[in-house]
Image (spheres, rainbow, N blue to C red):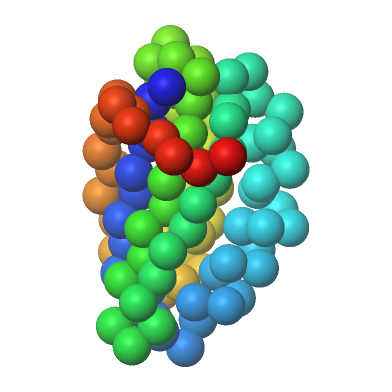
Length: 98
Protein backbone atom coordinates (compact mmCIF):
# COMPACT_ATOMS: atom_id res chain seq x y z
CA UNK A 1 0.00 0.00 0.00
CA UNK A 2 1.09 3.58 -0.64
CA UNK A 3 0.04 6.95 0.81
CA UNK A 4 0.03 10.50 -0.46
CA UNK A 5 0.42 13.05 2.33
CA UNK A 6 -0.76 16.59 1.65
CA UNK A 7 0.00 19.27 4.24
CA UNK A 8 -1.51 22.72 4.18
CA UNK A 9 -1.77 25.68 6.49
CA UNK A 10 -5.45 26.64 6.58
CA UNK A 11 -7.21 29.52 8.24
CA UNK A 12 -8.43 27.90 11.50
CA UNK A 13 -11.86 29.49 11.10
CA UNK A 14 -12.29 27.74 7.73
CA UNK A 15 -11.27 24.18 8.64
CA UNK A 16 -14.86 22.92 8.89
CA UNK A 17 -15.80 24.50 5.56
CA UNK A 18 -12.76 22.91 3.93
CA UNK A 19 -13.61 19.49 5.42
CA UNK A 20 -17.27 19.74 4.34
CA UNK A 21 -16.25 20.56 0.78
CA UNK A 22 -13.81 17.65 0.67
CA UNK A 23 -16.40 15.25 2.08
CA UNK A 24 -19.20 16.34 -0.27
CA UNK A 25 -17.39 17.30 -3.47
CA UNK A 26 -14.17 15.31 -3.64
CA UNK A 27 -14.29 12.09 -1.63
CA UNK A 28 -17.06 10.54 -3.79
CA UNK A 29 -14.81 11.03 -6.83
CA UNK A 30 -11.79 9.59 -5.03
CA UNK A 31 -13.82 6.49 -4.20
CA UNK A 32 -14.27 5.88 -7.94
CA UNK A 33 -10.53 5.92 -8.67
CA UNK A 34 -8.80 2.59 -9.26
CA UNK A 35 -6.80 1.52 -6.24
CA UNK A 36 -8.21 4.09 -3.79
CA UNK A 37 -8.24 2.57 -0.30
CA UNK A 38 -9.32 5.50 1.88
CA UNK A 39 -8.61 8.95 3.24
CA UNK A 40 -7.83 10.39 6.65
CA UNK A 41 -7.66 14.13 7.35
CA UNK A 42 -6.20 15.46 10.60
CA UNK A 43 -6.02 19.06 11.76
CA UNK A 44 -4.82 21.28 14.55
CA UNK A 45 -7.82 23.57 15.05
CA UNK A 46 -5.72 26.19 16.85
CA UNK A 47 -3.13 26.66 14.11
CA UNK A 48 -5.09 25.42 11.08
CA UNK A 49 -2.34 23.00 10.07
CA UNK A 50 -4.10 20.21 8.21
CA UNK A 51 -2.73 16.94 6.88
CA UNK A 52 -4.65 14.79 4.41
CA UNK A 53 -3.56 11.21 3.87
CA UNK A 54 -4.90 9.21 0.95
CA UNK A 55 -4.20 5.50 0.77
CA UNK A 56 -3.67 3.57 -2.46
CA UNK A 57 -3.48 -0.11 -3.30
CA UNK A 58 -0.16 0.35 -5.13
CA UNK A 59 2.37 2.98 -6.13
CA UNK A 60 1.03 2.74 -9.68
CA UNK A 61 -2.54 3.51 -8.51
CA UNK A 62 -1.29 6.46 -6.47
CA UNK A 63 0.70 7.86 -9.41
CA UNK A 64 -2.21 7.32 -11.81
CA UNK A 65 -4.49 9.37 -9.56
CA UNK A 66 -2.28 12.49 -9.57
CA UNK A 67 -4.23 14.45 -12.18
CA UNK A 68 -7.61 13.42 -10.75
CA UNK A 69 -6.82 14.69 -7.24
CA UNK A 70 -4.90 17.83 -8.16
CA UNK A 71 -8.02 20.01 -8.50
CA UNK A 72 -9.35 18.76 -5.14
CA UNK A 73 -6.06 19.71 -3.49
CA UNK A 74 -6.19 23.18 -5.07
CA UNK A 75 -9.84 23.64 -4.01
CA UNK A 76 -9.07 22.62 -0.43
CA UNK A 77 -6.20 25.10 -0.28
CA UNK A 78 -8.36 27.87 -1.72
CA UNK A 79 -11.30 27.16 0.60
CA UNK A 80 -9.02 26.95 3.62
CA UNK A 81 -7.21 30.16 2.77
CA UNK A 82 -3.95 28.27 2.37
CA UNK A 83 -0.82 28.67 0.30
CA UNK A 84 0.30 25.89 -2.08
CA UNK A 85 0.03 22.55 -0.25
CA UNK A 86 3.09 20.39 0.33
CA UNK A 87 2.72 16.90 -1.15
CA UNK A 88 4.78 13.83 -0.26
CA UNK A 89 4.45 10.18 -1.22
CA UNK A 90 5.26 7.15 0.93
CA UNK A 91 5.09 3.39 1.03
CA UNK A 92 2.98 2.15 3.95
CA UNK A 93 4.98 -0.46 5.83
CA UNK A 94 2.65 -0.93 8.83
CA UNK A 95 -1.12 -0.46 8.85
CA UNK A 96 -3.21 -1.39 11.90
CA UNK A 97 -6.49 0.24 10.80
CA UNK A 98 -9.25 -2.22 10.03
